Amino acid sequence: MFEVRIHSRGGQGGVTAARLLALAAVRDGKYATAFPFYGAERRGAPVVSFVRIDGSPIRISSQIRKPDLVIVLDPSVMDVVDVLQGIKPGGRVLVNAREPRDMGGHPACSVDLTGIALREKLEVAGSPILNTAVLGALAKMGIISMESAKSAIREMFSDPRNVSAAEAAYRELAA
Amino acid sequence: MLTVATGNKAVAAAVKEAAPAVVAAYPITPQTEIVEQIAEYVSSGELRSQYIPVESEHSAMAACIGASVTGARTFTATSSQGLQYMHEMVNWAAGARLPIVMANVNRALGPGWNIWAEHTDAIQERDSGWLQVYVGSVQEAFDAVLMAFAIAEDERVLLPVMVNLDGFLLSHTMQPFEVARAGDFIPPLHLPHAIDPAAPGGYGTLTGPEDYFKLRWDIERSMRDSAGVIRETQERFARTFGRKYGMAEEYRCEDAEVIVVAMGTLGREAEVAVDLLRGEGIRAGSMRVRWFRPFPRLDLSGRDVVVIDRDYSFGFGGVLAGSLAAAGGARPFSVIAGLGGQEVTYEDIAGFVRERRPGEEFWFGVNGDV
Image 1 (cartoon, chains in turn blue, green):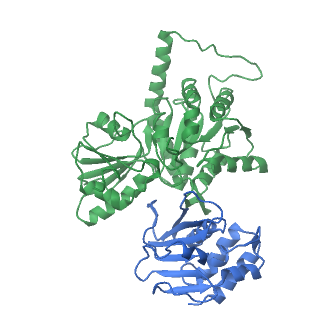
Image 2 (cartoon, chains in turn green, brown; image 1 turned 180 degrees about the horizontal axis):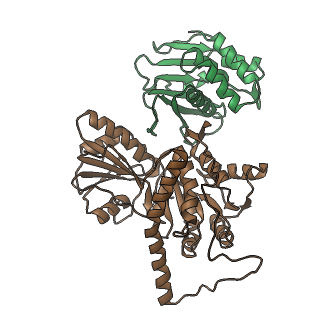
Image 3 (tube, one colour; image 1 turned 120 degrees about the vertical axis):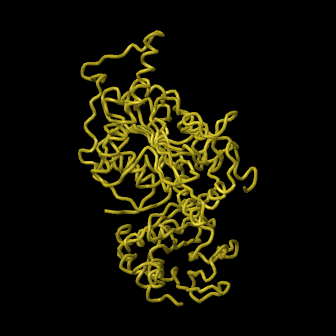
């Protein structure tokens, strides 16, 4: 079982990112579930969503306490949330940032998802859309195949710039 | 094709396949996405139903009753306070022998105001004459809605069916699922006591003690017959779509010395606890109760039983535990857990089994960890 926790802010598309990742994993022939943590969420507040990926059907509904991978879509949440809480020893981190960041000694990758989204003009109501680009980064990290990433994006979004954003993130991911 | 969607979307997709003539509904968290999606299907022409946006849940069920009595296939969905508000009409639907299908997204009752999963909302309707099924996955939610129409509308049943799915844990959790094309799986509805709008009439429903008693018995007779119809329908579903369901889902029970009984997502999580316990040398098994009405016969003889109730009847106890004790004479370790969406992990469930105390009741998180 591979468990992922996604940190973002309400309205940034963290839930959609979780769904895209689950869909891509399913297209890879695996089982996956994606779910948000529902609290008193509101636009702009720190939120988390979860993805489980496994080779057999997933029967667990409870929240993920010990993630194998933490994705930080909005680095500003790190000022208020301990994004590394419970992460497994050796667990990996993916951060939306231009420069590599020290993530408590955990193997960390960074990619400028915001810059990519702005370059591709992927914006909704003035906010950059990060959840399609992040799939390219996850493919580069070997979590899903790039083929399935693109297929998942095409199933959910008709605008081809979403696939271009994922391809850019795949190229630009810095380990 | 396999897709990834929430339990709510899966319910709506199943309703599209069943193509009810009338859908009347009122939105309520965490059910809203079901009726939103159905409204979209109707608006886009993908579903040719009369969609009646009503002003309350009481009206939603009243509208379903009015439509159903003309012999029309009907559907509604609700949750928690909404189900409470339609309570009078819930009983009417069963008494009038109308095969209405309703999805209920299980949510705690207020106050305290709480939108998360609990089964007490549906459990409080257990004596209404509705059949009740509780599902454990998104695929099962889809499959249960399709089967619910076939079971409710069978002339041996003609009782309404409530499909229950856990708030957020299923309603908002995305899982892979396959949209099965209903085809002719659900035969056309023939309601023997339908009123023809072209030749309007009505029923005088005032009924004296002798006839009322017969009508009540007739509900119970159909409820008993429904167990066979459920079995037939589930077998036909398995032959048609390849997925098998029982009254309860048994997991590693053959040689089990202790069996965990639960409903909904807790029953699925319990299977993971069983695997964990087996790894420790404890011969555990799990029975996930799907059909709560009619209540199934479970073979629990000679084993310890740990029942997890995501509900409570004040002054009595966990309703599932009490039902099992009444039906089979079991002296379960009765665990009350998950109320108001309380997080219960498979590790917690394994703990209930290891520390079981047959005959006692334990409130998880109130007594502290076992």
